[in-house]
Length: 402
Image: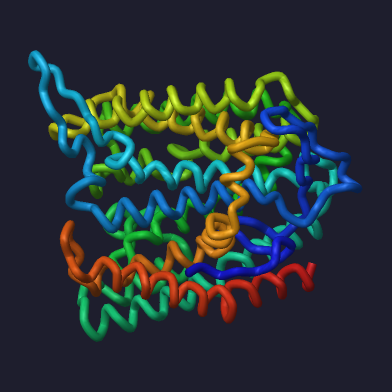
């Protein structure tokens, strides 16, 4: 089970705990417009639900790493052309894209609503304090636990005098050998998240100067250019079949965050030009195309440029449309994403994410492994404890200090 706080209880992995608007209820199948800021509620339930979807995708990916979750798994050939019947399962790693997009949305929403601003150093300091208390307590607890496990059993860390300071100061994303930390490989995305948080005040100022449209366009250029250098020019190191040290750096992933910030802007303005059913259909088509393209490019060991330019981007646009549909939906989509178990997983997904990493190293998992139920049970149980005793208290302290 996952943590089960009340709907007003703060705390998703990248969520700051700042209030945001909840769409007003409407008739099933009809879109709604965000209320004015003074009517905003403490949480947006569908955001928690989307985070629940993201963490389920990521844990599924790691539970079936060598089978269903491998690019192109189960491919069959018809007249020499590959068909991927399990393409949705083999691309659940894209849940990280959804995490990053949600992070951009939640962080920027108070600024899009005019509730927060970056106009003085004190405001930058307040933002950094909130983010530090939100992300760092659990990170350092899990880093310490990972180092202890490594010293006792795993012995993956080869140079502790270099690696430990790099992990502690978040410098590890700048080193190919440490980019995916040996103490817990899942920390790579936390490194990206932290550097996005550090860059965030400057991105807000940039948006204030050039506007959200130009910012998003520039982010697309930077991200696509970075991924071109990674996959066409081979500047990055391919750590796994789905992770590249350059393509999955902050510049390579900046379009994830930018689309989330664009979604926050549209939501704050009450944008309702695209009906939820159309957005869901578009999201489904784009996500399917992204999964298929990635399988075509990566399943047979040939990392093609099409995957770098299209595979990521189409998934990001799919999640952007899904987020927009969820925020405006008054029907089935909203009902599904507001289900309590899914929301609880979304609220506690930072703990779920960091906890299941070390367990992957400790338990011998396989497609028919009896350890899978134990892995899921330990992940859920330890996550509840860490959420209640580390993650949530740190987040609340950060809010009190600012």
